Image (tube, rainbow, N blue to C red):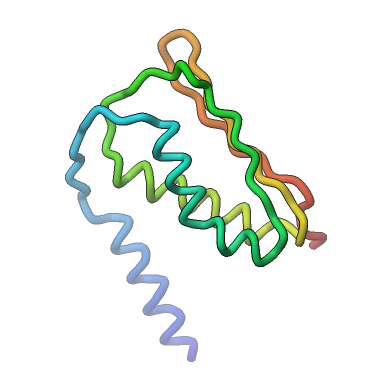
Length: 113
């Protein structure tokens, strides 16, 4: 049992250390966020959780790797979903300032530890 757990841990570490080939393309952050939320929505609905999107409509496209950013956003949403009690809300907000794009993730109703 313990050896299996350690093997899984080492495999995860090895995957994080692999070089990643970045494929830049012009993308909409708002579309990526929306797609990620939609992919996790069924799991959140089962727990009566919801996602409140406040996406800046005028957010410009940026050159990024869509797949990498999608994986990051999905992981953040799944982590928030796991940490929230039934009925919790995850708020995701996008905005732009000083030529920077900002994405905020805030969850409510955290589980008591």
